[in-house]
Image (cartoon, rainbow over all chains, first blue to last red; front, side, top):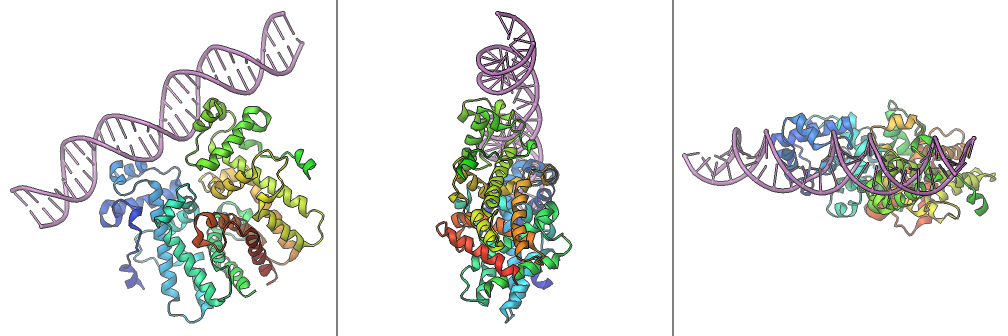
Length: 226
Length: 226
DNA sequence: CATTATTAATAGTAATACTTTCATGAACCT
DNA sequence: AGGTTCATGAAAGTATTACTATTAATAATG
């Protein structure tokens, strides 16, 4: 897998950036430090100015890669979901049992940070944290319809589709596969956030990670086999 | 119920505002037009300056009521959840069957806009829309821990607690009542958003409202009676 | 070596998110 | 009736944000 991953290049919608950050040194620095700073400061306090100071470069140089910080966030969320989709496909590909696929997909989605991250350029831990804390801001805007049309949320829709396809594979007649899939994927993110910041809203802390996978497996299984 | 509602005064945490907006004319105008404008413009484009122009008042007058727009949003979300909790308690109070309570609670949460809003000062439709589109931004910030400590999310935690208590009433041994409750409440909001803006993520459109209640009822029921 | 692309440095603009000060008028208190 | 308090409005000011534009320096390429 390491070998495969080292050659892995995730396909990111070209319209998200002005200039592909993976093609230059500065671009890669923008990704690394940008991820780090959004993680640390939160999206609201993060600015391109601060990133420029950190990278000892000019603000205008960063603007040549990304139109604004919102697009940078969208870049990261696409990167994250494309990565998880890759792992889901890779690890479920040769399995026969749809139930096994479900277990593995849920495990990856609930505990992505346990994945081997050799060959992944960006920190999976940081990506995971910013997706948990910031990703809803990427589509909860007035620009959602045009950005959806432009394909900015494809990676997120794709992973949801994968999960819903596994659900449908288990029970072809289940009519709410998409709703169940998206509710669980969103729920997995929220439960992690609640565990850390609003424990009254969850039964888990961030140590029982396998339990969190269990309950989402149960939610799906118990539903599709009514 | 109308009579009761006309006397209803929702308790909002005093630390959310600098000066209680419900006590003055300007304060009430800030709530009404603020809600309207956040709904129309979205939180990002909404500013106190724009609100001041709309109300033909000074920006500084608005700042005397709310520290910033973030607090105003928190005010609205508290108002909304306090209102729904009131309805849930009111409508389930005298019921014996926990299952009936569950059905009613879910129905209220999924279709709040069908509620009789005589006596509610603010538009339930607009509240519903901004809670769907903006409420996650109220707690997805770096200030979440201190604001949680200050009680800014009590109303949200309370309604989740109500739902989880109903779940526990149905099955005392079910260990994940809080996770199930918060996942469903968040899911109900997201499904409404997806139906409108990202239909690939849901099986519903915004016309089959009763179906949306059904699936969340099923998710809960099928789980607690494993 | 010439061309082109890339970046850094600087400056500038409009808007945002406030804060401060002060004047006015209404409400209320004795 | 007169003084005080309080809410509001008007105006001005500050720091930061979110950009855009211009130009010079540097590196890559052919």
